[in-house]
Image (tube, rainbow over all chains, first blue to last red):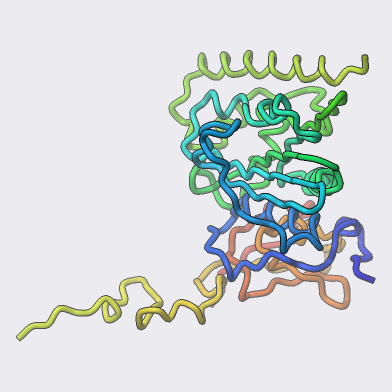
Length: 228
Length: 93
């Protein structure tokens, strides 16, 4: 009986691999929450996990402010990016380049995830760890200190990022594309921007422009996910 | 003759008494608000357990949840995410 016998955590391993006394994460850290579930998903392979920074001459280019966890075992080569948008510009916030770059580079499995949807995150990491070949998972981790919101709102801000289509959750690869969390009626991006103080200088005009860019991006994603 | 106080003697809003003694302190040693469960209304769903960034919430034998004081940093995510508002943050003494 290694599983809980109650409703919500019924599908997750019970053991905790993440030890808060061995890091100096702030209260309400999104990376800590994401890493806790990542470790649960890759149990048995944790010894192989290495914090690794791809070289700037590599295909990812400039990866400043991102942290990467690489897990290599046999034919599996899993690269997980923890993105807390440290020092990111608005265009980097709106459109994430790295998943597209990874797909163009020939990764077998590419996915985006957010710790506000822990089961989605768990499934994707698990699927990526079982894939033969290279796989890449991009995790958006809300950061209360850098984005300037209350520590208790970490999960809510993650929900807002997905519900406003700022960070759509999808998985893609060779010949398939699934939107795992579908937003039928997306909220206005203003909901996401107003929740954080780092965007307090944004005017309504800029928010409208950002919304138009997001709509185009999501429409492209929906088009890709249609069966041919 | 006046002597300049050592860093370790200053003790301005700081728990350290000497250099290099941060190790015995746990992440939860700072003063903070701790979650408290109202057991009459708790449905034992485990959302607080899922969303705790530090894995401080654990399940007791009777199915209710409690917090590990040495791990909790008092962020309040469990209080915010609880579906029924069962968890309240109480400042510890």
